[in-house]
Amino acid sequence: MSVSRRRLLLGAAMLPLAGCGFQPVYMPTASGKPGPAARELSAINVGIIPDRSGQLLRQALQARLADDGGTPQHYDLAVSFGIVSDVIGIQANNLATRVRLIGSANYILTSRTTPPTRVTSGSARFVDAYNLFDQQFFAGDLEDESVRRRIAEALAEQITNQLAIFFRKRAAG
Image 1 (cartoon, rainbow, N blue to C red):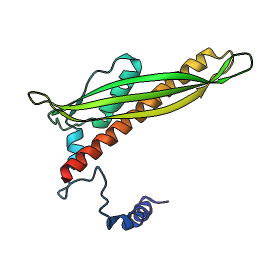
Image 2 (tube, rainbow, N blue to C red; image 1 turned 90 degrees about the vertical axis):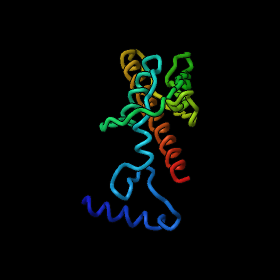
Image 3 (cartoon, rainbow, N blue to C red; image 1 turned 30 degrees about the vertical axis):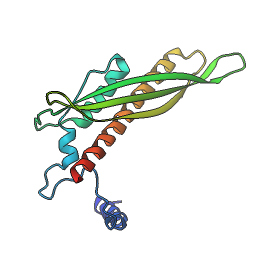
Image 4 (cartoon, rainbow, N blue to C red; image 1 turned 60 degrees about the horizontal axis):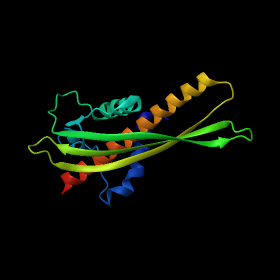
């Protein structure tokens, strides 16, 4: 399917939403400049998040909030993050066969004013799992790292979307 046909179909699918006031969160202004959500997201500094999984989450957040235009930082984002593992598949001989990882993050967005004020806060949660294979320890380690990366990416996406919606609503009044 060609790109122009996809756009036409997408436009036709969105037409019924026009009457209810639907607008994309990242919609640019009429002059073509970034909209309020994109401008505010690019002004966020992501604080250090401890541990390797925290580094993955911070990198994913920075990639989504990045601005190449040198926007001054007006906000600080503090994130507390943890992953809990739970064995959910156990054979009759007590060998684990499946591990579920639950990632949860709480965040607080504060302004860089003096004194700093809390702008918004929220939380995100994501669940993923992987299988353990008998005598395949290296494969299990690789799969664990892959799942932790997927959790970090999913949580970063949720946090970014929540912040974008907050900024969009705030700009609309």
